[in-house]
Image (cartoon, rainbow, N blue to C red):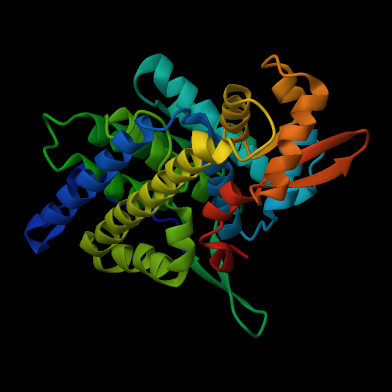
Length: 375
């Protein structure tokens, strides 16, 4: 019987769990697949998808860290990236992005993620003790998940499995379940959703399990071929439904009914894909608007260098005169071009030290659609 105060060493292997797809999960999984694949195609139509990849990755890092009560602002985060001068909170968020791309690089190299790769993903966001929790000689040092009540007292709501051999066995079973489509014939997206529940239940690390689990979602989507690059981040959806998310994780253990948490995760993928598609379409519209020859003819300068300037502006959130100089544009001319886009409301300008930096405020607004939920 499940007891939140005792190590849940009876956590069933994911390969033994039964899922009733007749409840509508099969259709939802297919609808989700379509939404994700439409997004994947749309990203390919951008002149340079790196702006989406880098900016979304930082937004996901911010949102995912927010779930762990690590709160920072966009300005602190992007200024830290540009000047390598982070606040403590922004640095923590930046570590998440490091973890994400460490995992993505490893997955590209090998075509899959192993348990050692999961440890490497967790390392940048785990400040308590690196590596999978070790098997201690007694149960005096347990990892527990607690809920702090309004009166200041804490309630133990879950004690994950204990013992490094067991944790490894559970993780290997989870990975095998995700990868082996011949033996485990569930819809791949249902398997990824269920694997998220299982990973959070295994809770193999002392710290950073939530952020590591959310990174694995993205990597599994890439490994299965739904995404060409890691651009689907569902942490904002989880923030908006945080109480329900944690309730479903808990209730699934108590009832051994997993359809509700699988449905939640599928909806997080689907709705995030649809929202990200709107961002992609908005970015494409902005690039078209500011690259239009008729529009550029109203500005001071030659059309082609101005178009190159717009292209540089939409490669990253912050741009400097030096970025245009690298394109062969004279420094003074580059400053004139960028100042014109400040006047047009595309950029804002700030003096930092001896240099001016220009922030693409129109672009950043697209990624702040959930700012009220992530503050």
